[in-house]
Amino acid sequence: MKSLTGPDVTRRTFLVSSSTAVAATMVPGAARGAPAAAPSMTTTALEVNGTTHRLELDTRVTLLDALREHLHLTGTKKGCDHGQCGACTVLVNGRRVNSCLTLAVMHDGDRVTTIEGLGTPSTLHPMQAAFVKHDGFQCGYCTPGQICSAVGALDELKRGVPSHVSASLATVPLVTADELRERMSGNICRCGAYSNIIEAITEVAEGKA
Image (tube, rainbow, N blue to C red; front, side, top):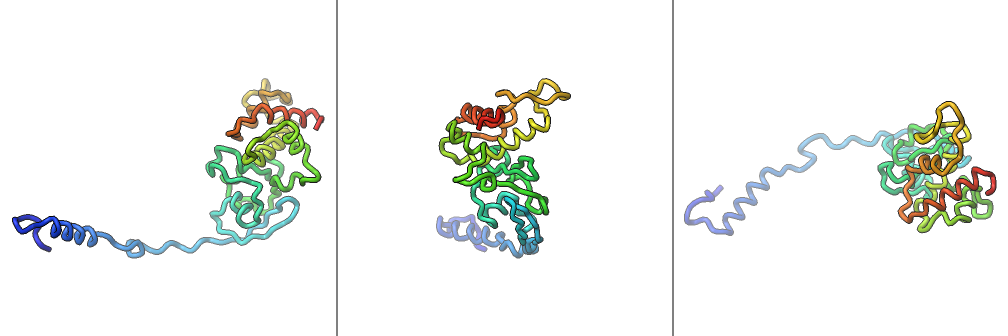
């Protein structure tokens, strides 16, 4: 390689020499190590909205992506993909779960309920009907997760599961606005329909929906 010092060095020769030196240090990715291993596939059975599906899945696929990309149930939304917004909330064996944070293979044989399984346009679930009645949504993106979470929250109250704001661990928590806000705090509504959501859930809890 030509020396980069001396009177004969021009800007052009300097750039050419420098580029050659850099290129010499660049090695293709495949040559730096072994190629990526093939994905590990497995058969997973999921009972989704009353129907059993046997899926051949990469073991790294989340429950959210299995529902959306493999079963085409797009009612369950992908929001932050970090478990922080609640848009992907579904019910697994009756308990609410952030589907973006759990792998599909972990739920082999489990019963999964998505927003599509709660009700239909002609026969709404009471929680869906209450959300419509009380304008519990604006853009609607977070609504499927909000409704699934609300159904799960009322089930927790019915079973006597306390929250951080429950007055006692020994008695069944009351259905109060504070209890509902705490239990729904993992579901973010950027449109700000929170007060209407609480009204909708309260109406269902009181059996008025």
